[in-house]
Length: 640
Image (cartoon, rainbow, N blue to C red; front, side, top):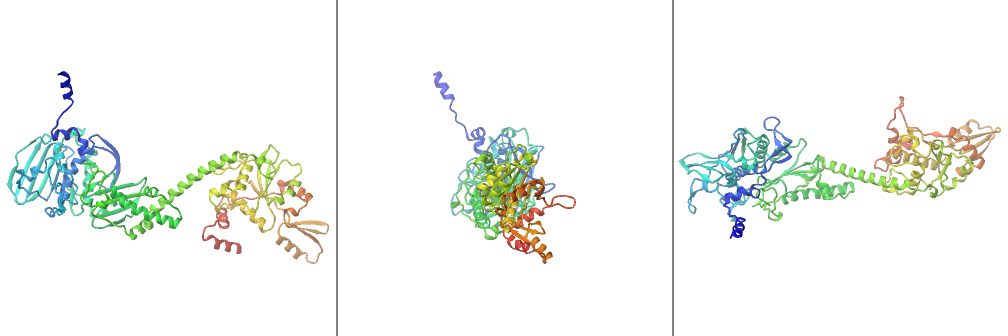
């Protein structure tokens, strides 16, 4: 017998009101405090939405929402089309809330239930939301769905007063003690049309002592949302009008930049750039769908598809849809036929697109305005650049680690310097393997000279992406030989294996082209080397003249021709040096003897005050960039 009593104690049967109060989360959402950064309406000062962190009770806002949306929904019906004004009064001192409209509920007795309509509709499982007749359009675009809404507000109130006038009669009734008690209806004659619902929430049921400032602000915010979604109504907060003439006006409360906006009878769409990830402020039949749903995807996907096509065509980049979506701040106010939600809180729409009953196809003009008038595309491209930079740095790190492991002895044809004093060491980058023999024999026993022959023309680092550059074998060898690392600034020559890096090429145009490409390479990645006076040239003669028992070297053909013009009547002999390989071993010994005194340092361009300028960067860009428009400028420069 004792065991039977224990077992039966586990089972309980609750009446409807007790079940609602015991399990509020099922009906009105969380009664626990919720803290979040949100937007609130500054009605008294800026008339703007202000972002701030607030703590509020979602369930308290929900029971308020059930009453105010009833007024808004009624204004859209044939019976309520005369309803034009909604007044919301909220007393933060007493905690009392009232919503008054100029609508009016029919004060008649329901023949089946023998109750006045204004009494019946504030009970659970009663109302107009159970008439699913396709021929009755009044309920198609309302916010209610289950016949629980307003009754829940009554249940979570210590006092709830209904007063309504339908133009013939008035009705007044007070519900008490969480809807467990109510007074008898008071019926009088009246020519007014008005409904006033006033109540004092049972704050203890919301884990609150009274109405605080944060919840007050959220109630005002929700009233503003109703005004934004129902611009045919005049809505007042504590007798102050909420001046929102259109949904576009509402969007402008959030952002100061131009709003890209489009609408039809059932869909109103606005878009701006998100400051973080994808954001949306969306409403279905005046209900805020905080968590979104298919209606948000329906609009977002149209925009994303068009933007993706544009970027692919314009910039030749295929961006993932999710990556584009992260840059969108979307505003949606739509009407959907008989919407269904994942819960009574209506945070997430579950109606499938095919069942919306309404639609919108965003126009080409709307998409063009997103591209040309908003900064969404700029934001996406900046993110792509940032992503590429991240990948760039990852590639650099990987490349630098691999190069640091390079065995210099295995680099073909590299002849290293033997000195331990690396600041005195000079690396000669020679034009081709055929040019190596001369300087190799000419350096003799010098421990300070290193030689590395280039294979043809160096890579133009301005014309290729990073992967192509760092995959270039010669580029990798130069980095390994010099000790340079990409994305690492050289602040002191001691970081390098050589105090000087010298270009050694023929004195003809091809040779000067090689010098230019090398200078471009080092300036692109390590411009500071020029300031540190590391980069230099060793000029070798292109012509030598024996004149009156003297040997005169010329380092350019123009200099020789000028000398010849001045000495036209004198006899001389000359030798033309086709390339570096034309010089003898003895001549190379002469070139490399006291070579430090013969090096021509390449210095950065400076002003009279020795301040660096952007001239060098502009010049390298002009000469080596493959960007469109540079070709014509380059031709003009060469002519000059």
